[in-house]
Length: 231
Image 1 (spheres, rainbow, N blue to C red):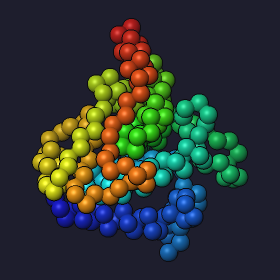
Image 2: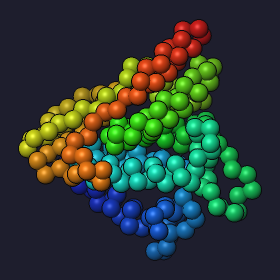
Image 3: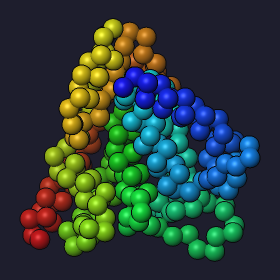
Image 4: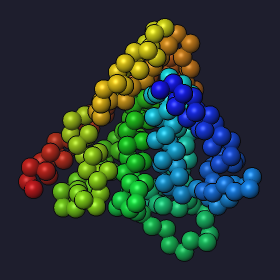
């Protein structure tokens, strides 16, 4: 529905205006003021929303914005083992920084970030991001097999990983209409991108968004399949 897309774009613009300060996100907004440093789930869910809105609207500037937020996550939340801390570096009121991998009322922010790294890596031609996403998924495979009911999003990512994720690029003056037609079907293994004649050219100078699959991706996929078959 075009009205939903229009309202989603307006809401996204409002959120970025209100919650983003000096290049980072805030956690809450009340009475005209944004407060408290953003947590990992704030970044993860917003990046996911930007990517989904970009696919629905054809506005590829949103993909570039999502990638900018991913860069912040990589710089401020990295735990050094492929996963991410829940709180950013420099937040002094938190005595211990934790890495949360399990779902709660909402999906694990680390699982959502693995998904984001995968899609942003494909769209922005950053093979290190797609590779890190694969490593995160691979490191969670044993846990998925044993406790899939506690980490449903990770379980979905393992399935996507085994089948392979693809980007579908629609080009030309009718690109948006093609995207709308495709999105009438459930395509869980595909991320759809529209490139019309006046598409946004990303900051890397590229005029097309391509998929990048490192050679190590296939090796990690075989390892995951092996773990699943053993269990």
